[in-house]
Length: 127
Image (cartoon, rainbow, N blue to C red; front, side, top):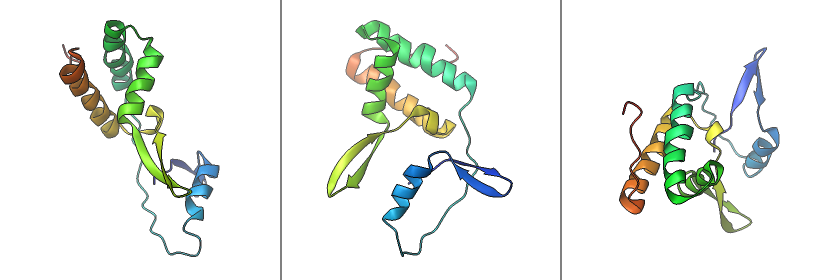
C-alpha cells in the first residue's frame, strides 16, 4: 500500500489519514516496515499531453466526452485489487496520486490499447 504525506515541522501529515488508519488496522500488533521516498509529482507538460492528446484523440474518435474517456482508461489500466471482507474488490486509482514514472507507464498502456484494440493512433508528444 502507498500513502502520500508531507513533512511539516518534522511531523508526517498524511493526505488521507482515514485511509491510512484503515490500512494499518489489519496490521494491529504486527511489526511492519515503512519505506520513505520523495514523491515526484508529474510535470505540467505530461499532464497537458495526457489531457489534450492521450484522452482527447480517442474521445473524439469514439464519441466520448474527455472525462468519460478518462474514467474508462482509469478503470481499465489504473486500478488495484484489495481483499475486503473476504472478497477481492477493484479499486480505481486517481491520476493525481501517481508519480511521473507511473503516469508514463499508464500512458503507454493507453496508447498500446488504442492502437492494437481500437485502431486509434495517439501521437507522441514531439509529433
